[in-house]
Image 1 (cartoon, rainbow, N blue to C red):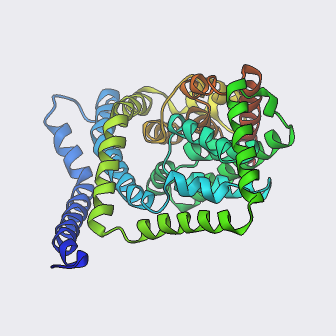
Image 2 (spheres, rainbow, N blue to C red):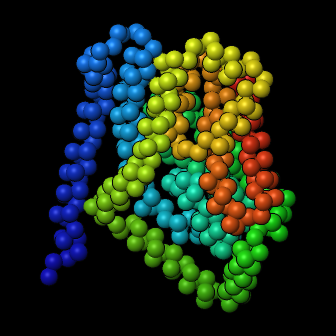
Image 3 (cartoon, rainbow, N blue to C red):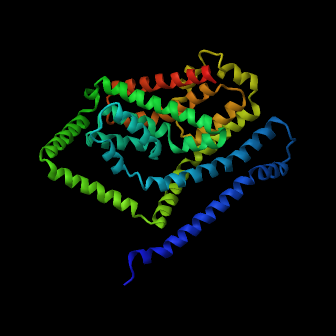
Length: 371
């Protein structure tokens, strides 16, 4: 009988061949973006240099560019996700104290690909697993705001300095906000049914710990088996996970991307540079608070908002103001608040939004002062 390794080899060869073909095609298309955009624009009855021509060229160029970047980043992170399952994430955070737990939760939020809405069920799972509430909020903030898509697109479009600054300040907001919420001891503002379930889970965990090493070894063996299963996955399985991730994420967010690029194209083609600099420049004190207020109701994701960020920066808007706008769009979305209302009382949602907004304001003012 053939061994499992022998059976897996043909699948792995096909998967590696498909990966190589995907990489070659991706690089070829990305290198051809400018000629393709120029050729497409030349086919249209437009006079070069006009506002409309500039806007359409921006749209033709940025649409495949952002989709290509998004596809590549999401595929890679789909593979990474095979090493960071929700169960493993919960296990890593369970029992961690505030401070260290906040930093670990925020860091895990960066590498685990969960949007603001999908992070909410994990938020509940963390509470049930005995993770402190402040630590869970650090993850809830970091997962959508400092996610791999935002960092990958920022790095590809604006360089490593902007991406690194965004990463550092985003982690600061997530850690600081989660720590503050944890120190306020607001567990009584959870909905009653959530608090009761969390208390039962905490009691069960305490009872399990009271049994001594027997249960501890059992849990350790379970986590070990889970880790071993993840590590034994073949490349064919990881490739399939990456491909599925692309289908799910890109298939879901492409309308936001098209809408974001269309808005960016209008800004690029029609908005005067002096006007944008006057309302979103570093010298306008109210620019950062206004950007945050405007961003909250504009639900989008990192992929959809990046083209708008690109156009705003090209028109002279200050980096801190634009990043504050981006953070508020991603991390303070109305759909997230609606879902959170099922598990949090309104007062806690308002406190959560206020603390996060304060951190985002600080990021905007610091960036505008330093850069």
